[in-house]
Length: 326
Image 1 (cartoon, rainbow, N blue to C red):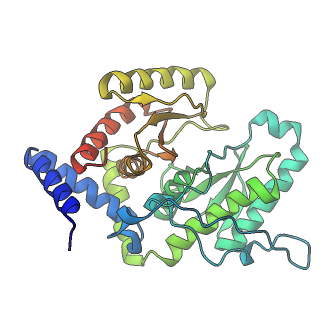
Image 2 (image 1 turned 135 degrees about the horizontal axis):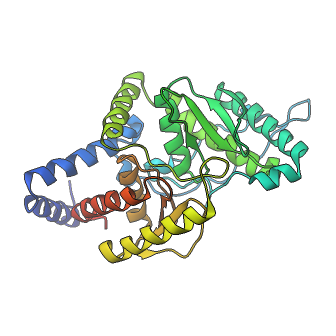
């Protein structure tokens, strides 16, 4: 039985929906359906109840060869950040710059080799050095798998890039000579283990087909907006210009506060609560805009498509207000 507060909240949402036009109401319902669709089945009817509470970090285990036995570390995982669980990292893990790689090429090769070894052990997916400095490439087998994993991993605050050319099925993950086995390398391997666990073991084939259809639908509406990233399309000057333009529009048109936290390729928008930031993050992702959060700050991509992001943010914000989460 619903409590008085829950009944009041539902009535309030219903009242706001009655004030919407038929077109707006359908768009709101479509957004809600998309958020449910992208989640593994176990979360679809309860994602509002998931709490962003961490289970703690698992320790490293080593095999007889002295190498990390990545496949033996985890028995279970925290809830997906996509579903409202805690992001794997508090701050975004970024790839190394070209200058950092050129200063320590041998160490960089060692890091790439260990990340690839770990990813293969925990996912059975092929992983190798990417032609793009600062990244390794995971062969996902399908564009749907690559697209879902990229979205899920970014929401865990680990950089990821979905290849977009044709029917590309590759996923890029960060690497750098400064990555340590017990820290950054473990971060990359853990997030692959976690997201693949939910995708491969908790998402049925029929659901994957539905998610594939969703990606086709939202892709027809707007191209996937990803942040400009190191090694591919990131330029300091262009980032500064787009960041300022997006920030000015968000403040003026939406009345939201821009975070002072700087992260290359990302712009932070401050929301009043973690719950609000989580819902906004999911809403942006199902509108084909990569998004992630750090506490109450929602981070949005800066780069090609940055101007369109502001329009999407405005629409999702409006629906969030109708739903009572903003």
